[in-house]
Amino acid sequence: MVDDKSKLKPPVPRFSPTNELDTYSFNNEGIQVQIRIISYASDFVPHYEISVRGLSEGTKLVLNTLRGELITDVKLDITEIMDPKKRGEVRAKFEVKANSLLSKHFPTLSDADKAVLTAYLIQNSLGLGELEVPMHDEQLEELVLNSSADPVWVYHKKYGWCKTNIQIKSEEAIYDYAAMIGRRIGKQINILNPLMDAHLSTGDRVNATLFPVSAFGNTITIRKFSKNPWTIPYLIELNCINANVSALIWLCIQNEMSLLVSGGTASGKTSFLNAISCFMPANQRIVSIEDTRELTLPTFLQWVPMTTRESNAEGKGEITMLDLLVNALRQRPDRMIVGEVRKQREAEILFEAMHTGHSVYATIHADNASETISRLTNPPINMQKSVLDSLSGVVVQYRHRRLNIRRTLEFAEIQKGGDVNVLHRWDIKSDRINEVGKMTSLASTLSLYAGLTQKEIDADVADKAKVLTWMVKKGYKDVNSVGRVVSRYYMNPEEIISLATKGGSFATEG
Image (tube, rainbow, N blue to C red; front, side, top):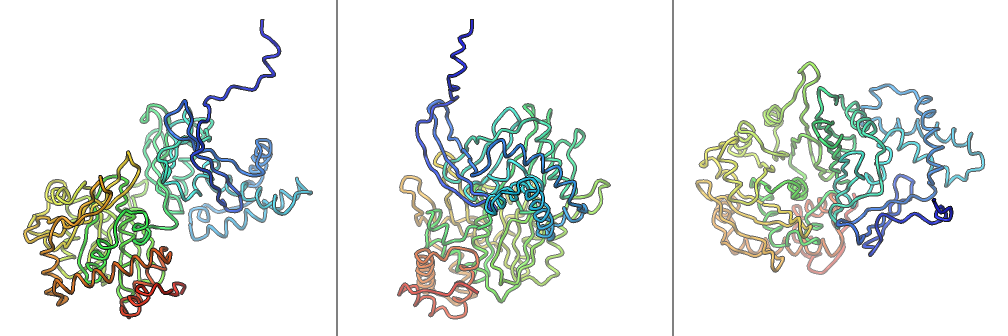
């Protein structure tokens, strides 16, 4: 016999909280979101728990009913939905109709509450529904759905992988999310095509798979595109790299020396490539080539961003990395930035560009400087080692998963014949980057083309390191601020060095 009093007992929580690791809030397009990172005694990973002011479960049910009416009433052409340039216009149409619906159904609602509910309606109509809140958290790098049986997981910049309190109700719901993302960029995912690589209009990369290819259920993996990309002062502040090595890289870029950024998966290669791009002069033309738009350069640079395109359902219209590389050489670029080198023909064009006087910056998968050369000289890239001396240096990025940190592991110069000479290497015990080799090839190139002696190179690096340290202290860390300081330095180095020495302020606004 069941004791009726047991019905009055509160449900036993699945886990008992032991420690609140962190709490913070952010504004999600008008919705105030509270985040708690909690460690539970009975679980092995932190929990990322979301709460939204003014949105009870009952309110959400009513709003989801109104959502169907909203979508029906707002007439949109498919081209409007697919065009990222019309995102603002589409949102404005939904906002007007959403306000009208809320006024009709909730006449006594305050303007503040109406704004919150309007934002929720729009995000659930145009965006990714329940996933929209974590998508707007700048502390997250990755958002993943492993199946409807699992909670949504996120990768937090500080706490690593965390379970969320979001649970997708069914495999069909996960499929609907994937199909919607695909439709907006002209792609399909179905039983015949169960794998999809795509991107959101915000630049976030998306991978989706369907059961039974993914045995536990349908999956979606979203790698978030940083709205505030890394810059060198920011990386110095995080201890990812020090001012001296950064200054040496700056000197290389100033003197049009080509560099490769290598590292493992999610080690921060593209982010570092973006960071050093701020060192490029404003009076030169830059062409970038990527599979998905990830780079963000200062707005005042002469920059032509280009992206590849996959073929349509009939197998036509594909634009490859190679197509764009060949085309870019006809655009008279002073600098070329390439998202990632994977194939032999791409590498051949890249190194041909270096040999013909272009400064080239690209990423490649390799764990250290020696492996970078091995990767370049073995299949599938298979370059002749003698060709590599047109490359000046390799910067290696490293992600230490256990400590959840990213560091610049090595900076190496490329010697005659294609061998590497590691100049700086990170030491895990001291968490510092140490000088481990003496500069030879870089010094020779800087002497030949810039007329710099070793003493002058050292002085220049010291000046640049002083400027970078000053930028960290003054908080000049966003892309445009760093770009403006660097551009001003190229015009009048004495002015910027003087400000850095005295700790003065610089007008970083345009």
